[in-house]
Image (cartoon, rainbow over all chains, first blue to last red; front, side, top):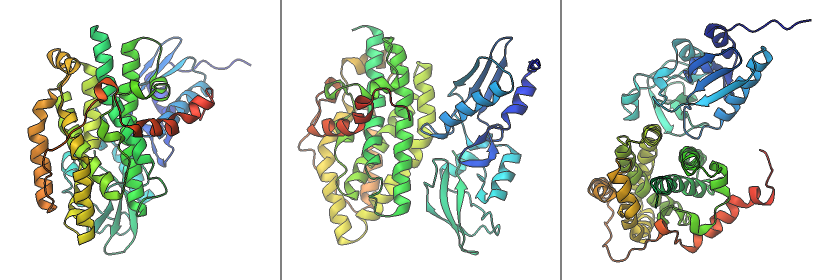
Length: 164
Length: 252
């Protein structure tokens, strides 16, 4: 049996990449996170360009391996994963769908624009009860991209996907 | 010294500061005063190690001698390191860790802000990425220095002792040698000496709010730019480099 040749257009590759999730936040695909910067499909190679969320994010190495694996499984040869730094990733790149998925998963999505949040002035809503009466427990959470919050109304602690 | 060799040296200075400090912060793992703070210290350390990786990877490319970021991190001995003496100082108590962190966070903040305008595209890209992270780091160390300084008698005393003990490591950050000057002239690097005024302004505000006394400028030590380090760096490297040296082909 002959393996069908993989499709050579960017959109098909993009569709496949939607299956790659952030290993720490399995509801968020790398597309939703906005870390896929470019896709180049050649006749005998595919180049994927990704940008790191945080410089030291350990998930990046795993994401690169998964991109390679999944495209290879779909019949692509010579898959290259390249890192680009500019423009630096910002939480503003997270898609609407990504924000919705985060909230349903119990992680408060980044609120407002990244500049205001860097200065710590935007209120964060509780993903459980939607109250805006919340407070920071720590600006550093279980992963580089999250902060620890608690809700003063329903008293639930929660993760907040912080703005950068 | 060739232009490439100077750029290589300059990149080591930038990368080594972040890497050694990141390793120091990792030493708090499992020993931090509270869980949230443990997470914070590991997060900051991870950011720093990530920044170091970017700088050292680029340094390896500039050197063009076949060394990658891992070779540079794990196969250089003490005298080949270019990190500031400040960042290799032992953690001490939590106050000392925070004093060291505040000094370097404020320094990196103004340094990287300057590097945004570097004519070297990779340097300015790494600076832009890192500056977002450093903004968080600085807020964190600032909050703790104020909280401890303006806290109890004991916490105030410890915070004051910490800044007194580290004050002599501050001037080295703002030194300019031939390599720094060449990088400045090429538009790649920043004028470290000119950063001092802004650093002082930030620190003075924080000290005032924290009810801490700015130490007198009495003593200072330097040497990192030519690979002269305190005895602490060797011990840190022994731990950090043990695994890849003992098991050269080990994969994570």
